[in-house]
Amino acid sequence: MSTGKKTKRVGIITLGCDKNTVDNEYLAGLLEDIGYEVIPLEGFNAEESFDVVLLNTCGFILDAKKQSIDVISEIAESKRKRKNPSKFFVFGCLAQRYPQELWKEFPEIDGLVGVGQLETLLRYIQEEELPRNQKFCCLRKPSVSVGRYIRRKIITPSAYSFLKIADGCSHACSFCSIPQIKGAYHSVPMDILLQEAEYLIGQGIKELNLIAQDITRYGRDLKKGYGLPELIQELAKLKGDFWIRCLYVLPSGVTKKLLQVMKTEPKVVHYLDIPIQHVDKKVLRLMNRPGWNKDVIKAIQEIRDFIPDMVFRTTIILGFPGESFRAFQQLIKGIEQIRFERLGSFIFSPEENTPAMELPGKVGKLVAERRYHILMETQAEISYEFNKNRVGKEYKVLIDDYDKEKNLWIGRSYAEAPDVDGVIWISSPRTLQIGGFYQVKIEEAEIYDLYGKVV
Image 1 (tube, rainbow, N blue to C red):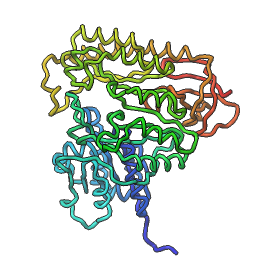
Image 2: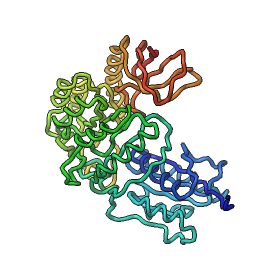
Image 3: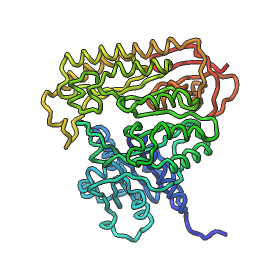
Image 4: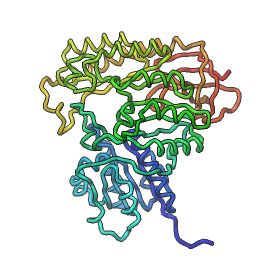
């Protein structure tokens, strides 16, 4: 029997990293469990009516902050002019970093919370009569610890998902504001992660991407005698045909035990995302990177010797203060020697209240941009060589999507992480299943993408 009560529509927008995606899926699950209809949004559309819009913001670098401000402005204007949405809540990293500024600048915001406060946000959404001045909560000492299992609503329909095994950061990289925004590193207890992973697999997820600011640090703060290798072993015991992928790995945290688990567990793909940030030791020291004095080239080679088909992705910061022409040459030489299969790069963005902002030896914008183009041209040759050598070979491929215009399926092998790497465009005489695994023979290579057919 109907109660006659209208189900409230909640639009939820994710900006920033994969960790924000996970947080929004937690929030969507909590809202759905108490009767709200949750609609994931790519962006805000003023023509679509909502009772509530939730915006999870990013505040890490300048471009991300600008994007968050632009979306806040767009929604605030629609609320002011059209009264759509009825209620507007802002949360996440930008809210944590600039709470007072956002609260004063945008009176259209009905509630604001910082990081790690989903339960508080949920209460604000439910308690409609609570005045605006009582819907502001941003802790000076943020904490992103997880104390209980929350059923996630998958808001990005695909064959893969992200398993956030920890949040926060206890490193002290000189360029990074994440420890200020999110606080210390907090691991999610293993029993919660296993329950969450089992649920995701039950929902049809075929790839679990392990994420944190540094997944190799997992478990140390819990002091329960387990770490990342033990977590992977327990995840691999779960029933089902699925992959486990390791993202955000610090070179200093890759142990023999971890590599042994990766080598022996069939569900773990031979792929490591290792953001080295640079090769030159002086630059790494100025960045205050963990293990800055270690030989990165030697470390990568040792991993390749142990697991020959390991695929590496890395991230490089260009134009960091103190990056001389000689340091840049050292970087290019190192990249040519290591030959990362995947590489992303960005130009240094000085973040307020970080040590790097005060460092001497600033690199000009034009110089940094030129170095960026040189690096990416160098990497394009390396990536193309890697892809070209795969032509004629067969791989197990996970189907993510179908492109109607091209009449091709979109998939990835173990060598392609979702969102950041290229894809494999697949032709097939029969209909394939999204979320299914198929053997695919590679027929053509581009710099980042591949083309193949189902065999």
